[in-house]
Image (cartoon, rainbow, N blue to C red; front, side):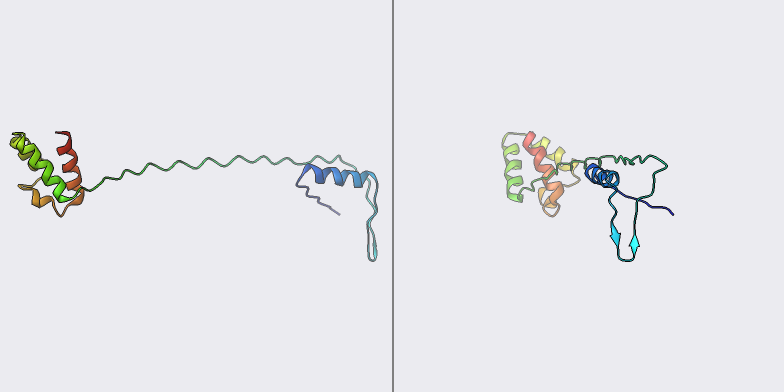
Length: 120
């Protein structure tokens, strides 16, 4: 006969041992349950669990503000008014276009183009 006792807390273990020492004799209908003499000492099993790894922090989202086509045009005109037409042409070539309206339907390129215009 094998009896297995699972205890989840130290308090449960203390209650179990107190009951065992007091030799309480719980009765069930039709059965007389008496504690059997212990031949081995009871050693509670300690289960160690690793703490869950901390969740990685999400990468900060980089949002690129897409400027309006009018904002880009105004920045380009400002550059031209400063006498830097060659710089504007080189930037247009870098983005593979010959004129600003070609960037109108490419919001990602338009945003990058505008960012470069702003630092010129």
